[in-house]
Length: 149
Image 1 (tube, rainbow, N blue to C red):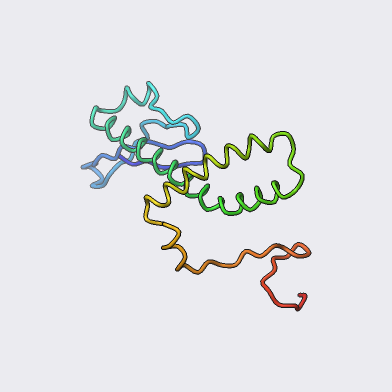
Image 2: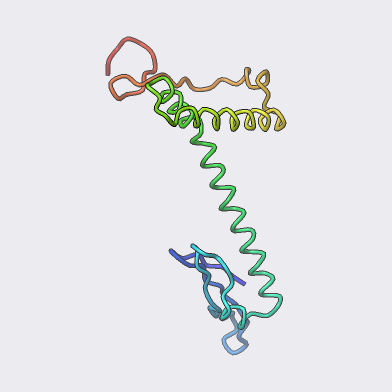
């Protein structure tokens, strides 16, 4: 079985050996919509039980990979979001600020606990040199020094 990702769908392909031409022949069995990934009745009807099991394993692994990618992407952007939230709370908070603050504190406690359990305690991270994230001046990031560029 092969799974060929296209723009909006994933093609499910069976390759069988053709003795006449002495090479494999590919046959598209069906497609799976990327937005709502599930095995269609048509695909279910043309696949063997082993092939269906393989399609289900691929769907599960693909969904897990997408979930992990989304988590990684969210984690990578979290420091910038936290800095933006700090700027929001330094300004004139609106009526929703109290609710946001409560939710952020709860999430922050959960994140600190997860970091500690993963081996990223504050004392271990103190030895890691991070890039300096200075506030922006005139729309450009400030890296120190007095010269204007």
